[in-house]
Image (cartoon, rainbow, N blue to C red; front, top):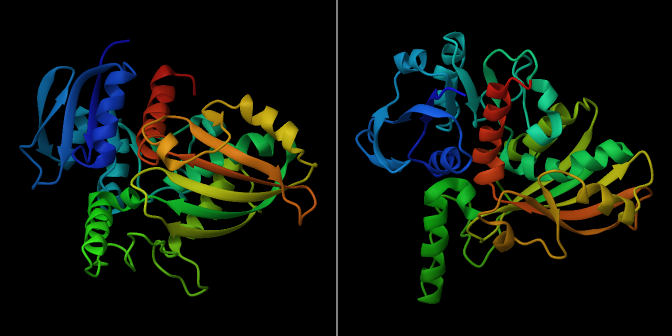
Length: 330
C-alpha cells in the first residue's frame, strides 16, 4: 500500500506518544507524518522511524493535507476540527467524547462491531477507555448468551487523569511517608493509599458523566438500545490500567465453564486466573478472570477484567479502526 499522510493531533500527550509507537510497531503505511499539538508544544521533537520529527501547532488548514488524522487532544479541539477535517476527505479517528453519541458517527471497537464502519462519513469515534475494557469481555458473552443488564464498578488508574494525576499520586505517597498531608488538586480527595469513588462531573441523579458513558456507549456498541446498566466509577492508586468488576444478567443461562470457552475464543481477550493492572499494563489484550456464577441472581455471571487504558483503551483501538478503514474491509 502506498504510504499515507498521517497526522496525530495531541502528539505530545500520553495517548499521542502511544499512537506514535503503535504506528511504527504495527507497520502502519505511513508516507508522511505530521505531529500536531498546542502552540506551547510546537517545536518539541519526537522520534519516529529513526528520524526526528518536529511538532507543529495544530491548524485547520493542515487537515486538507492529511489522509488520516488520529485525534487525542480533548473534546473542545475535536469539536473545532473533527467535522471540518472529515469534510476535507480526511479520515478522523477521535479519542474524545465529542462525537460518541452522534447518530451519524460510528462508535467502534473493531473486535466487536467493525461492521458499524460501513458507510462511515470519515469521522469515527473511539469509546471511553473503561467502556472498551468492559465491552471486550461482555460482547462475546452477549453474543453467546444474550445480555439483558449489568452492574459495573470500575477501578481506574491515576494516569487516566493524565500526567498530572500520576504526579499527584506519587507526590501524595511521598508526602504521607514523610508524615505530611497529601494534596488533592487533580482528584476530589487524596489518592495515595486511598480510593476515590468519584470520577467526572456529578449529575442531579447522583451519578457522574463518567458513569453515564458506560451505559450509553455500551448500548450503542452492542446495538442494545434498552440495555440497563448501573455503574460506579472509582479512582484507585495504581499507575496504569483500568479494571472493572462486572455482574451481568443473560437471557440464556451463562454457565461459567461455557462462558470461559467463549472468552477463550474471543480476539483481544486473554483469560487469566488473577487479572491485575500490573499484569495488563503495557499489553494489548484485555485480561479477564474471577469468572463465576452470580449466586444471588438467576442467569447471572460475574467477572473482573483489566486492560491498559492508554493502549487498547485508546491508542491501539484507534489504530485498529484506521487499519480497518484503509484496508477497505469496511
